[in-house]
Length: 198
Image (tube, rainbow, N blue to C red; front, side, top):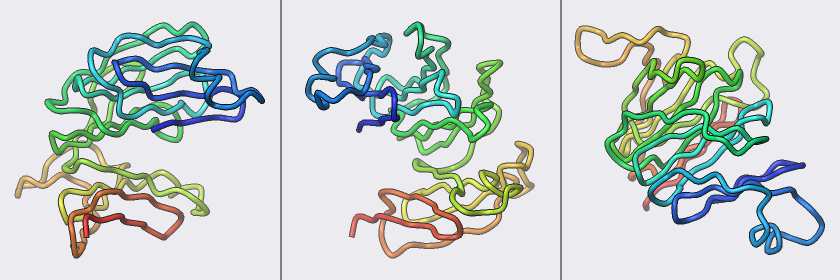
């Protein structure tokens, strides 16, 4: 997977490193050969990378079960977030940049506070997406959707981390069953797009 911005980019590499590159007119091939800096620290393949909203940080998730945050300007590792027991397949900053969210093969979606490097919430699922697009300002980014097998779960992310008496996470708004195992999930406004194994 590759993620690019208009002025700089992040390239997901095998071998546990992430390269940031200046986007020029020479094309992607030259950028990959001549990275601006290498973010080295993962001990296994990097599966997911994403920029912070202000473009100053990059978050990466790896097959080494770790989430790392990097300083884009210096290339320095800012912190390592530990807790997943399987490969981290998706990472993303929250819209305000205060939290990082990670999805893993251990069937958990975890929320991390960037300032303290601590986990603040855990939900069930391997995949996740935030409600995005042309929604009202007070609801934009408020809801998070996770996917677990063939089940889609919608949570109110404003709810505090706690558990109800039946063991389910607080803030569960709704859930739906898909006709097959969910392989990808994305949101745009009120629309939820699913990709399945069928």
